[in-house]
Image 1 (cartoon, one colour):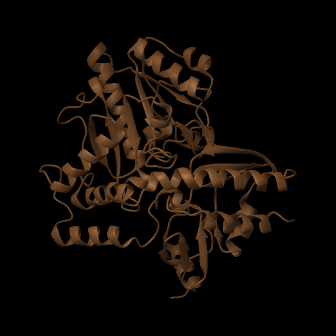
Image 2: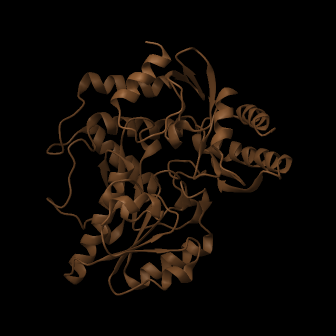
Image 3: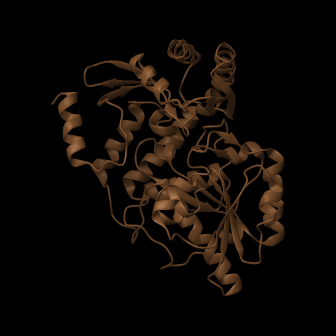
Length: 396
């Protein structure tokens, strides 16, 4: 089957929920992807911030093959060693106390919402707990996660959604404070907004939110699905701010390609859920949690955080030069670590298509922002290559 035949078959049989680019991938190696015609592409998207360790990491592959030969699935009615080890690793790395493994980021958000609502119910006897989320946030596409996603176009066709949700301005504390009522059970936010345009939280804003939640006995939920797992230079972005939430969601690079997410809780929130409150058939199965274990092992062994901190500074300086060269087109540069964005005056889809022709994979964050979320093993030479190719695409 050639690429044309593959795309025709997919378009005939798959629901049209994605406007896919006309590329059929065959394999990956390190920070490069190869289509079925053999063309090489430098990857600065990493499967939307998923493939932190790059492609075809032999140790990662072997760990999963070994687990497949042992057992893949048993259900959560029983224990498994990979699940226990993974839970220990993720709680220690995050500073949280307990974890629930899910299949995806959006499921992690659903669980976090349920945990916060259950805490409020136990405290007040009322099931009317309300949640404050942020404008321009993105938390997922299931109905609960969609309800707290702060972009109207995603929510509008699917109402009525979960009630009791209000939206504040990100990095504007007074707008959050104005929405607090005696029914507020949680505040949810991304320490670095991803889909909303790569906006990092301000230190003071998070400090004020943390203090407010402490005073009002409100659950603070951090969505670290995209900005967590080393992406900003610490294992979790909140650690860079020295502020821990009560509940945290993670996914994407947690399994580096194997579908796995999690929500974690700390202190009095860690033991809120009881048997029957929440569940999952596949979540936390031996294969998924074996992936979690080897990811944490390789982060330490391959000094991933150190590399992020070295290369991210270089990426920042390089993108500043690109912006200076094309100030007629680029109006802002934002981000943290290896999660950066360039905001353009016009939509960026055509630039992304040109980059593909040059052998460079980029993705957007909204219509006008190019998002740079490469594998965390990226080197300075790859940044140079990316910048050279991007500059070529901006000459028009």
